[in-house]
Amino acid sequence: MSELYAGKIILKPTAMGRLRIRDRYSLHRMVLDLYPCRETDGKGPFARDVQWADRGEHLAGREVLLLGNRPPLTEDLPDDVRVMVKKLPDSFLEHEIYRIRMDVNPCRCVDGRRQAVPRGELEKWLHDKAERSGFTFTHLQIGRYSATRFVKERHRVTFAELRVDGIVRVLDADLFKQTVANGFGRGKAFGYGLMQIIPISLQ
Image (cartoon, rainbow, N blue to C red):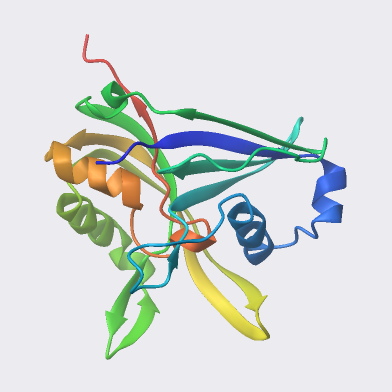
């Protein structure tokens, strides 16, 4: 697995206004500006290799978490945008049990179209997808479930949005690392799927 760099962006109120941060699409554009495009192999589309998660307003400003396989560009940023990032040590993903929080986009493909998972099926969807991703929930708390909407290039876009908290146990270490690096579920470009994990010691 490639190296991973974790960090966060702090946007002061002046930056929020200057960058016109109003919705997930404006956050998406702001984050990707820190990661110049690069081609994967000359045959496919440009790759950005970054996940992000909006943590909302704090005393210091709007906080956005980052995870990517390369660090963002941090040179020549204005004073109202602060970016902090560091390489994750290899040992961080060698634990068995983690506390987790993530915002996910629960959806499935039905007749070629993406549809939101019904509320009554969310727990099963999460457990099934977790086991296919190398881990299992030993404790699961399902939070708010809503729809978020924004306009992208004059088209209205809607995402199902679910907050998940819990405790997970790693079943397949290699698959778990891939899931952390790639994100859980769909919608990575728009702030879904970043696994915010903290190791829990068994001692």
